[in-house]
Length: 203
Image 1 (spheres, rainbow, N blue to C red):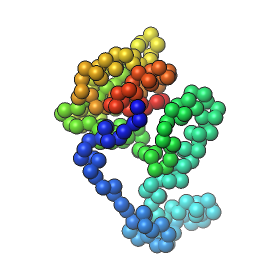
Image 2: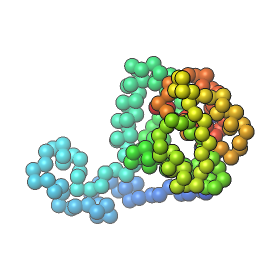
Image 3: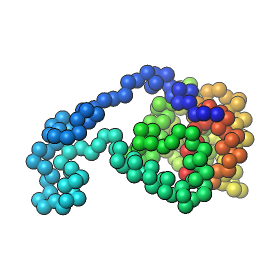
Image 4: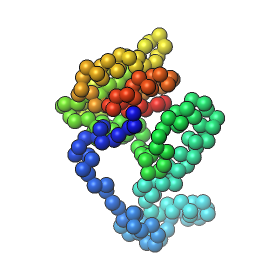
């Protein structure tokens, strides 16, 4: 089943117009709107590399070059790692800077995903403990109930059939965030990705 963001994100989020900043139109010249130091870097004797970094102005808000470097690294790693290669083959939409989102640590990304996808006080989220404690904290802050389906402690792998059963029983489960450093098999992915509420975060 093809991933459809409109089946996951909250309707009010889908109606938002993306924020547009001056960097979308102007990237050269004196950018006073970006609190630029027009005298250049505060370094007394910057190297050519430091000058290229343009430390006197804010970095690119879209992080296009950084995202491309991350993508290139991921692709190069996939050529050496069979598991990563198989994961990338299963992605119908190629990874590009436009569909890669970076966060200030995983905490920000977890909070943003919950806020954008789960209706407070109504919808729920699945986690598979033992896992990262910030899922619980961010869910509580955003008034999202957690449904906990523990890992199989003999293997420390998820239990896909138990998760699928719970998803079938409870239509209010909107987000199934599966993160536990587990090794995924293709059968696990097939079992769970048949549900539109499932978003797989592989690590």
